[in-house]
Length: 244
Image (cartoon, rainbow, N blue to C red; front, side, top):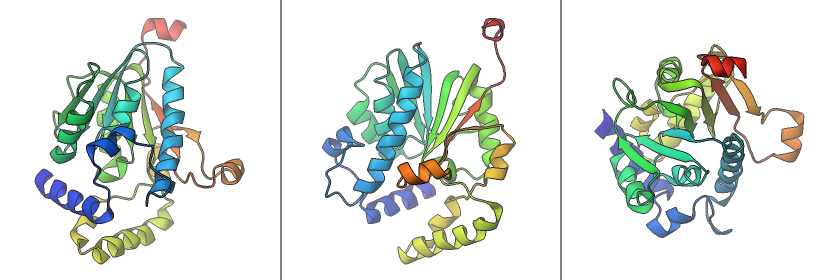
C-alpha cells in the first residue's frame, strides 16, 4: 500500500509541477511572484508564520513532530525556533530523501520514513504534533487523532492546518470534485487516498479554532486564507502543570 501511494502521489506532484529543485526547496515558502503557485505559497507562508509565532512564544524546549512532512520545508522552518527539536515523518521515501539531503545537516532535525501506525513513532514522546496539509491523506480522522494523543507529552498539543474541513452535506460534492480532478489528470485511482473530513467528526476531540476562515473578519482581512487552524490539547497534565 505504501509503495502504491508513493508512486501515485509522486505522479500527481510531477504533473502539477510541484517537484522542487534542492535550491528552490531551501527557499520555501518563499517563491517568485511569477511562480504558478505563488498564491498558494503565500497562504502557507502566513499559516506557518502563525504557527511558528505561537510555538516560539512558549519560550521553552519542545520536541515538534510533523506528520506527513513531505519534502521537509516546514520542518526546517520549525527547527529555527529556539530550543526546538524536530522530527519529520512521512511514507514518501522520495520526498524524505530530498528533505534529508537539503535539511538533514541541522543537528536538531531528523526524518523518519514509515507508516503512522501500528508502531510508528510510539517511542518518540512529542510536545507538539503538526499536521500541515496532510490530515486528508489519513483514512480515519478518529484513529489518527487518538494515536497522536497517545504520543503527546502531558499538556502537549496537536495542530492541524492547511487542510479543508467540510459540513456533512458538502462531502459528496467534494468527493466528486476530487475524483474529477484526478481523472482529468489520468490518475483516478489517487482519489482513493484522499479523504474528506468533517468539522463534526473533529468536534469529538474538543478542538480550539485558532484561525477561523469562516468568520466575517477573516473573510475581509484574510480572504485568501481558506483553511482553519485547529489545536487539540492532551488533557493529561503533570501535577506542576495543574498547579501553574
